[in-house]
Image (cartoon, rainbow, N blue to C red; front, top):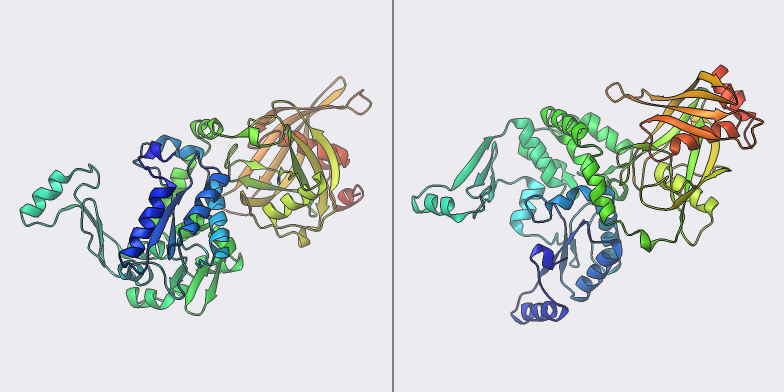
Length: 487
């Protein structure tokens, strides 16, 4: 992988470089590590981390691969944010255990107490928002009300930069006047490099109280435990560090937020990204067949069903049932309980085992069998919080309507609706043909599916049938109807 991106080296060469640095009298040195590559699995990254720790640097800085402008840019779509954040968490755990320290979300880990592990320039830039002038090809400069890039930022060619220097001119190629709200967004975005916002520095820079200016955003983050107030700093929590890419845009300007929402709709679920991901998916690493659990969870006086939005390939950004792979060290039941807790925060339920789904082509990753479970939980006791590779989780109101009947079967239209957000209403519907009771083997065939991943529409209908709720929903779905069938 190193050769492909123009990096070469060997264990001996790196050891020799470390020894030369120490022998030359440098008191401190840092090692940069990159992660988030398509062909870099967790085991490979762990080996890299162990070797870097063995070199005993004073600081280790993590950089997520950005892909743009590199020879491997076409691989970017195959790497989910979940994979990148998982590798950061692996590094955080290993580096902390080795005596390196960083608050959650920070990229530079330090073995020296009370030392950020960064230069004075970078520390003041990140914490205080201090203006700076960039020197060199394509370098960035940041002032109180402007942002600039030197010549060569686009072309990577020295000629234009050199001509400006020789003519006694600043070699600036692009200069942007920043409105106040864009300057604020830039300050906050850069501050997250250290994983916190210094409220005093923000007040001195903009003559504003951060907690007042961003009152709604801060309340949202504190209530969901993404961030916490520690003295005069608003800091990421360990939980919040997993969602830093969603937290930072909360502080963007309204114009930038609207633009991001527009772009996200265009970029969701690109087929090429899925194909890129699948091209390197190492199914041979897992037992054949792999086993998963999917949980159908009902709740409330109104018919509601809990769904999560997938943050990883395949079906990234699609709605699905909570669930995931069973580990070799646990039973299917234990795995189902663990997955439900990891992805929704809900635990302590009695899960009723349902059907096993083993259609050979049910999952694009390979031969994967799913064991379904279902349960009911009072709505007052169910406050889901997404986690692991679930980037959202919501309750959807459930309704069923009989479309047509045929000899031995009935076709139902199942609709799932979420209206908790005025600007982000979600609606999913599918049609399922269900054979009538008394058939030799009751079957469920989903004929149309709008919005659900995998064969989860079939799993949902199966749970409705097993709990005796399909007819109840069609007529009048009541709390007593649910509780009467709870086992």
